[in-house]
Amino acid sequence: MALAELRAPVRSHYAVWALVAAAIGIQILYPLMPESWRTPVTIASVVVFFLASVADAYRVLGAVSAAVLVAVAGGGGLVAESIGVATGWPFGQYAYTGTLGPEVLGVPVVVPMAWVMMAWPALVVARTLVHGAVAVTAVGAVALTTWDVFLDPQMVAAGHWRWFAPEPGLPLIPGIPLTNYLGWLVVSAVVLATLNASLRRTDQPSAPAATLYLWVYFSSVLAHAVFFGLPGSAVTGGVLMGAVAIPFAVSLARRRGRGGQSRVSSPTSAARPNK
Image (tube, rainbow, N blue to C red; front, side):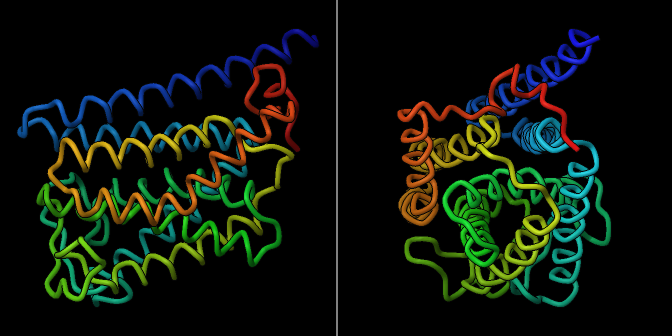
């Protein structure tokens, strides 16, 4: 009986890593694809990344917590984006161009999925770096918002949405208004505060979530600088998201150096029951 109980969590652990590898693999392929293939690859990338994050939350915290993640981050993202499209608040005046697939309330379905896919790693990052509800909310909101310093320029350049009043913007990133990032901070703070209050805190950070966050950071700097012709966002995003990602990477390295390898990152530790 004990062996049977062990095998399912171990399989779950490997399934999460398979999804993480698939998400990374799709993102590696994206800049190598012809222009006509990039939109379907974008959608596939979000879907697989979403599944990886939700599966990891399920592995670490259980089914109820994974459902809370989807409801809070996905539902909150959908509400904020639908209000934003209709009113221009809190992000500024923008519109989707109809290229990202089916929509709900004027918002492509993949957009709230994108909120979910990065909200879970952002929570893991914040809980690794700081303690206390206010600090976790603040760091988590910054961890999530600074990702958009890469995302928005890339998606605007690809023609997936457009801004009607794009100035003033961040240094080196024309075409994206400052109000967008302020709106992201507000929405991200609400999402992260709710998740932090709702989801049990674990002793050690999730290795899959950490891998996803650091992959997004380092690959975004490289892709924007080399493949997408967006050196401004490579620099500005590299500095702003790096203010969270680099201390996070250092913290993980120190934990490993102290022999503090994450229990949830190993197959046997994944077998611990979550209640």
